[in-house]
Image 1 (cartoon, rainbow, N blue to C red):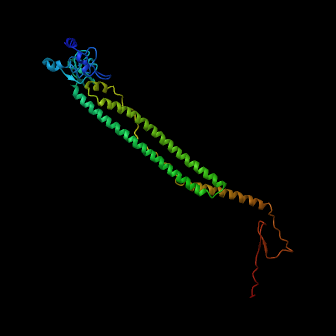
Image 2 (image 1 turned 30 degrees about the horizontal axis):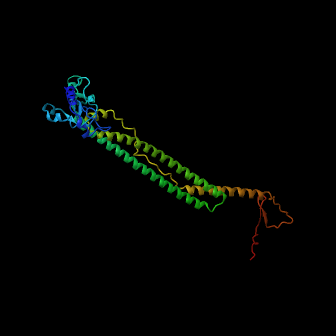
Image 3 (image 1 turned 180 degrees about the vertical axis):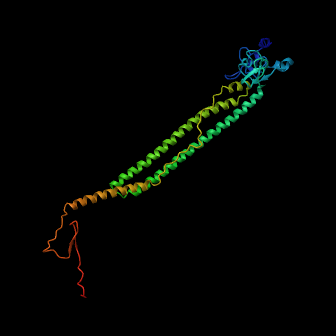
Length: 328
């Protein structure tokens, strides 16, 4: 019947096609128009034909055709027909997650849970809306995390600059040994800072990669969620790419390295170095003195009787004698 109707409709005059809107690339053309194709106004799910305004007139005036189900124009109407039963796909099987026709419910899907396309369409569309909102929330969290990481790096920079300034202030008055310690202090702080920045940059790269993948996912979900075609949405829903793997960033932090006590430890090391150098200097001086020391001997004939020699023979002390008893 659909073929006969299409043939009869094509025999109508198309002289007025120039006065109607010609279909553009991406628009569904009228299947009945010959020559210049006019933009289709509706598609008939019974005839499986798309009609322009002129050729749609019979569906609006003929009682038998008025009962046909019309919808916004779509391409590939044949995809809406069950390949097995040649009937309109108007139901959805929850068990097999596929669109079926009425005859399918009496055969392969007899015991399955089957619902109308619109009911499943509304459910899937709501699910897409929820998924899109969740993805948007994940993106927002990652953007906040990026700002948090950047702020942590800024604080770390400030701490590093403050510690470096303090270290320079402490060591600026010292000479060669102090300058060496100052350079070691700066290098140590900068190395910690570089490690912090490297860690933060690694997290940021991961977050930006996840955002990129999530943006692609959101675009796919958004595009499908705007689809008004029940069948197309349901058919494409199951083939929608799975959500990209993401990391739970809730507990991820960049902790600025602690510089507490860095300067104090450096000064203490400097004190130890100075103390060690002083000790070496003292030992050197002591050895130099020891080169000239000799054993002391007292001549009993010439030495003063109040001079006392130490046991090791190195020192001589003068002892004042006590006055004799009975003398004032």
